[in-house]
Structure formats: structure tokens, C-alpha cells
Image (tube, one colour):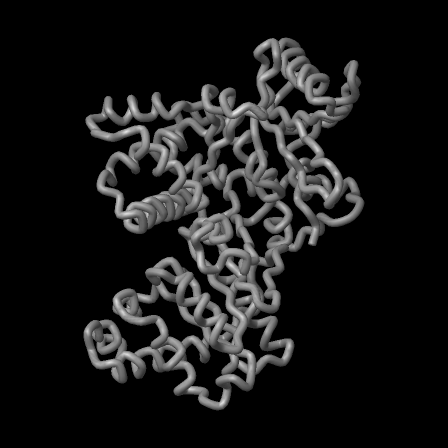
Length: 457
């Protein structure tokens, strides 16, 4: 049986489908786990009785991460035949979307009948969203077989947040982002751990110039500028096409126009009503509820994120605009028109993504006098302790005295109102400490902020 046979088996007898699956399973078993790759400071694992769910925006490296995990299992003594690995977006498996996914298990256990019920099978299903009702299949698999399951996808809402999900309470989530700056340095064999010498600092600062241009998507590394832009744009189009297809959106052009408006305005405010009016001005017949759904879809895909005002009042949150950020500053630069995106807005986007790796609880703040603080992050805390609040302003340069005074005043007012003793201003190069009435403001260069913000593993 060849690949064409596999691709044309929709509606074929069950035994032919199983033979097709067996062929593909064998191919994945024979794949060599990756050797030296761009290192990731991410460790995915498994817990007994839990399903590991890995989510990420397309192109951020989750597939390689799964293969690295497979390599770890093999190096730890797990036999290769005890690992069932499938990419469910494989074109040859398209027909499986219309069939019972239990065929996967039948095919695997026909290949390895001695494993059933006697040895743990480690299951890895990439792009699991291609399988309709995948949660029912995984729940049944966990309940009826002796296995550990890891699934990954680019368009997965958090299953543990869905109260009707059959996997509620049985999920361990792993959210994967494009390469952080520290991981980017690892890929260049630049040591960034521990105290830094003057030479190391200069090396890291030079490497940041590259990271600023390249961004965090592994697939654009080692390409020239034009190739990077083309790769970013191709990935952007593919992500949007996946969102449109996955959600069966009937207004694809409106979704694309909305996404472009948002990325053009990264770091800026928007209101649902204004977005709806904008789309209508382009000739799209859309409702506010559709725009809200599309914004959720962008976030589920890990592409664009919305930030609310920092407040305990639902009313205040609802009447104030949101801010928007893109998953990667270099991606935003490659696909935006460049009319509004500039170094300040992209720098703020970069700072947002650094914080987003640490916590999903990110807001902006408006003081009682109407001054804005760009980012408010609620940092993870140990049980029994209150979450620490991090206040961050982003400004490429404080050389202009009026800009410096404005940024310091906004941050110091917020520090008083929120009872936070330290604030941060992230700049391109400046490094200093500014005493204010309620505490101190640390002015830090962006490369150092990125290194200090990222948790070490």
C-alpha cells in the first residue's frame, strides 16, 4: 500500500483503514528523534492519570518539543515501540476525521499486541484539533488503556476551562511561546546565566540587535531580511486560514481585515464598537458579537492578545478600551503596514510577550489623573501569599526631559495608588535608579529586562 492508497481510503473497509494507519505509525516509529536543535528552556512531562496538553501558535516549535520529549523517553529506557506518535494533520489521515478514532488503537495494537494492558504506551498526538471530538477519544483512551497521553495543537482553547469537557480536572497544560531572548542566546552558544562580565554584556547587547530583527519563531533563524519577512507573512496567512477554517467563519475577508488592523495597532487601544464600525466601513456586514468571537479565536490561536484596564469593577472594565499585542514583535513588523507600528510600539509588544511567558494576568493602568501605565502584571505567588504587582512603563529613550518627566510621574502616581514600592521603565539602553516619593523606579535596558523577567529552568 502506498501513500496515495492511504489518502483515498475514506469509506473503505475498516481493515484497509487499519493497514493504512499501521503503515503511517511504522513511519513515525522509524523517525529519528532530533539531535542538536535550538534548545528550549521548557520541560514538558506527564503526571499519572493526567493528559498533557501543549498549546502554541503555529510555528513556535511545539512539534520539535514533542520529538525532544520522545528522545528523552528513549534515552530513559522506554522502548521505541512503546511510543505511539501521530501528526493528525497529516494529509494521509484526512479521512480519519470522518471515522472512529479508535481505529488508531486497533492499528497500533495489531502492530504490538503484546503491549496491550501489560506495558505503558506513551501516546503523542500532534495537531489534535484536526480530530473532531478529540477530547472524547482521549478520555476514553485514558480510561480503557494503560497509557500516558500528550496532545498538542495550534487552535486549542484551554480544555480545563470548558466545564462540559470530558477532560475537566484531568489536564496539565503547557503553553509554548516562540523563542525567548535567553533561548535565542542559547542557540548562539552565548552564556546568559549568572553574573555577567563586561565582555558578556557587550556580546549579549549585540545579540539583542539580532533578536530584535529576527524575533522568536525558530523557522526564520539564519535567513536574510527578505526571507524572514516572507516567512513571517506566510506563517501569518497560514495561521489566519487555520482560524477561519477551524471556526467555519463565513466572513473570511472580514477576519483578515480585522487581524491586519489589530497588528497595525499593536500596543494601542481599541473598542469593540470601533472595530465593528471599521469593518462596516470596508463593506463587511458584521455584528459586534462576531467581532468578539473573532478576538477570542485570535487569542486561542496564540496570535493576538487583548489587555483590559486594571480594575476590580466589571463596569469600569467594560466601558474602557482594551489594548492589543501580537505574539512576536518581529512578526508584527513583517506583516503590519508600518503606518502606526514604530520602535516604541514594537518595544512595548516585546515587553508584553516577555511578561506573558510568566503570567496571563496582564493589564494596563490609568491613574486618577488620567495618566497611563503601559503594563501591570500580576506575578505568580506561592499559596497563601498575595500576588506581587509589577508596574512597567516602556519608552525607547528618556533623553527628552519632558518625556522623562511624564513617564516618571505616571509610574510614581500608579505606585502610590496601588501601594507598589518599585516600578520599572524599560528603555533601549538606559540603566539607572530614580528615587521617587513612594519608592524607587528602576530604569533598565530591554535586553536586561528580558533576561531578568524570564524564569530559569
